[in-house]
Length: 371
Image (tube, one colour):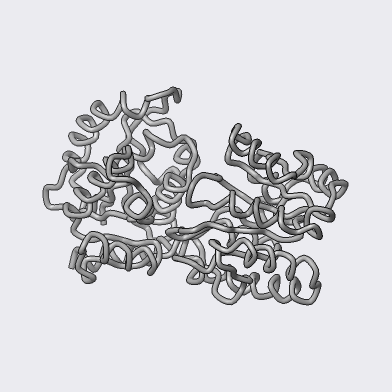
């Protein structure tokens, strides 16, 4: 089977969850499923696709990332990729993001992955994300079949966009940050000298509910006095975040933002007392699986896709209730037996998710659509 991936996400993201998923999928479809896979990204900025197996054919050149480069290259990429895909004559075109205009169809079947319905649920009618909602709707209508990354996302897609269930399938994601990515001994040694800490990972905007976590942490004298709150990634604290930290009478030394490589993140997971995922909504949620793979106990929200992903391997809370968040964190950090139980359950849970499995199930979708 000939499978084509278009340029969209590779021209927009240097790093990011969606481009990592698409790159992993292309690589596994080639190496595991033995399919003829090509990526048509004439001018791309993405870092993941340069590490793909040689068998994945890449039509394009990497260019420097700069502000608005995605918008500038978009029309050029569209027309060049359209011509190249026409010549390739694929059986499947997997669109890598949402566009109001299809790249090319011919006899190919169009597959689209929908990750979440965050914009539709949280955006205001006149917000910039409402434009993204319109583009997503166009892409959904154009697709022959839609892959959702969780049952939760599929339910929301059907409910909000009135998509027939027979047009959808669920394929769970894998995760890349495995124990093979563990940090060097010097990183772990440095962290061993750090006070005990609670770990938060990723962006802190809006639905991620970082402010709710801050309020919960601030309400607990026990947590404030004994544990730091380490926030990995997401950029430096904004002025409003610093202001809130001060308003809550928290010490900036106790609430820290750090960044680093996958190896560094692995070290933080390995040594954290607990990993907290307080999001209001997730289409899937990879960080809890990453934490579990490093034997880090997980507490997370009980909403959207998160119960589907973590199963019985995490202690869950109501993310809209700061008391619920606080109590869950306190229970885990105080109870060695509970932590051990969550670690063991986490080891078992991560066995259900891999990029190999994701590719195999995606290939089954391709075959069913072509039959």
